[in-house]
Image 1 (cartoon, rainbow, N blue to C red):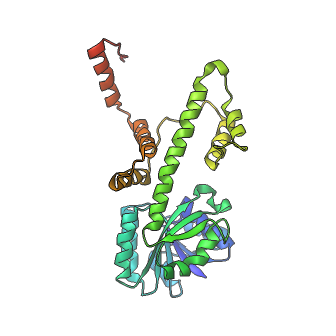
Image 2 (cartoon, rainbow, N blue to C red; image 1 turned 180 degrees about the horizontal axis):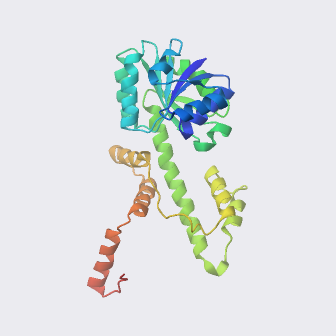
Image 3 (spheres, rainbow, N blue to C red; image 1 turned 180 degrees about the vertical axis):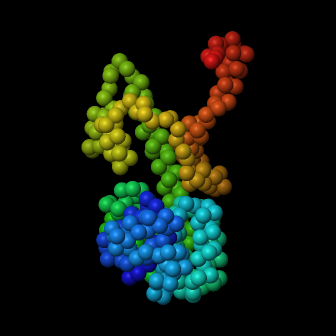
Length: 302
């Protein structure tokens, strides 16, 4: 089987490596020519000099996996790609696109007879060794055609991947997955902050997190990674207290509002990330001003 991978960053490049390990031929293209050359030499990937060149190297029906940042970059790439394809070909978007964009793109491509799959992809930099968790949305026909690729990328052929519904369902599932992830991360961070603050006990956070990894109710991969990090350094003074938020966290909260379903934990976890990004801290300054105005409370000044 031969397919193309457009976008060979951390995720795309490792996916190529895993696909090659499992015997699938991959034609790869990235604007960084050194990355293309390197993957060709290391993993036996077939190098493409352009998107058009990648398409030409594929047998019909062609399968092209787009692994690019969400938004205009993915949109423009799919728009550029579609005219080069024929009926029966398939485009897969494995990035973190908004599920509504995936529904729109799927409908537009279907009008041209081109199949589309939105693949919610989880696994990060560990996916190469552990496999990727894949939540895909597509028609049954498209899902069946792509199945060998999904099995090669997943932890095993019989688990870690699923055709979860029609176009849009894959990215929607991944969006909610990431919203839950925000909440889990926030809970761990707050709990460990409380433990660190209880100075009278002088608790060893590396010891505690390692302890929790074994048979506790809160054991998880996130806890595994946290324990590993704390074992190296508990002070974390080299890390800036700034936490970015991906679009998916925001989209999850917006969806909860649209559905009228309360999601306070997920929403607050997102808001806490916003708080970490507020370098001006204007709202906190206003709060201090108000406390001083009505109660005469002291204000810290520079």
